[in-house]
Length: 310
Image (cartoon, rainbow, N blue to C red):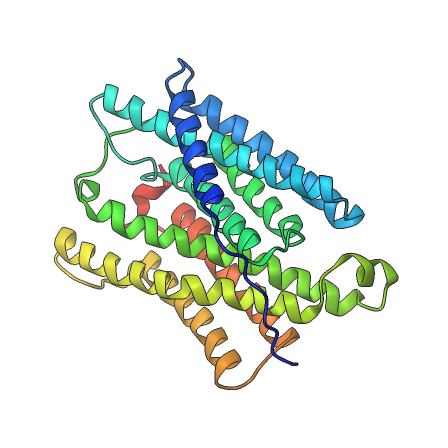
């Protein structure tokens, strides 16, 4: 398969103005007397709407629908950020301030936010909206799982979590989760294109396999070093908190498995020349390890990271 060069769009000053406006709107909304869960639930609903609009855009290719899809996702991110800010305010008022990504509920909603932000960055950078039809359902599911299955209570942090490492390690880890989520969407789209490419509908409405393959690759190439940094930062935090860099905790083991999977993907693509279906399936199975690393380990395997189930 030939290498595809995707034209990048310049990041304009107006883009930064819109980002700043979104942050200011979120700060303003957080001052209203609504609990953080109100904003998180609003974000979940808007993510669901955005997923539907992205799907409609995939089917109809109406430019107006494309703009509405991006706008609704942006709105969901603003509501999500509002919930995060409001939750930080509420934890401060309770005397137990901490950043809003310390337990399962907060981690899932933070994942939704980072994944949406990373997707929007890639959409803006490369100009392809169609992958949103595959990424937004994952973001919606993650947000909905937090709302309906996780404990919403604000609780004091465990002593081991009261550290500046909480800011560094968790942010890098969830940036990795977000990039792998976007890559998964691209890989699923590729496999659909590959299997149903002979259908007129698929030929007409989906990007070429080369484009989907390249977007998947770029998503992983961007976040793989960040995921590597999260493992290193986590080891440094573990040494400070528990007296050892590595303890074969289930979370540590599965974080390493995720690293090995996506490292193998980059190795196969860059050094062995793999393209197409083989590496797309590798990304799909890699994302399954991501889900195991977060959901299965946090919920079902006791260990040093068991606090994340609360």
